[in-house]
Length: 171
Image (tube, rainbow, N blue to C red):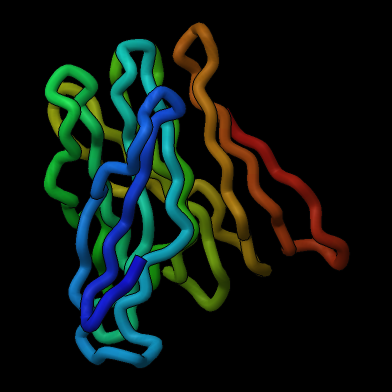
């Protein structure tokens, strides 16, 4: 939802009656293409905690990734934190949480002449550095991430390194 020069992001669990405010983002120039929040993704854990990631282009039009979580015990969202910001675009994230509470985010990045795929994770030590998993001639797009019962991480994406797009996978 947007009003004046701010955008607000809301979310709710299926058991909630009303939406909770996830975060606010100030627009640097109202009524322009600047500072658009988009492509939100949610994951949940067995305790009912929610984890959200999205991109926002409020840094002079350069997309960055933000993260926030909903603590089921306090029923409050954390203050959104800047997750990935660099000289390259970071966009179209997806998120997963394993049974140990580790959070994984996969996203598109423009670190080369083409769109690549990177992943970052949060464990007990905090957030890792981004790790590039797809960097080849041709765009890599629309990454998806899940964890399985053994806490293995699975990632797939649309890849355009060949004449016809293909689906790539890594674990």
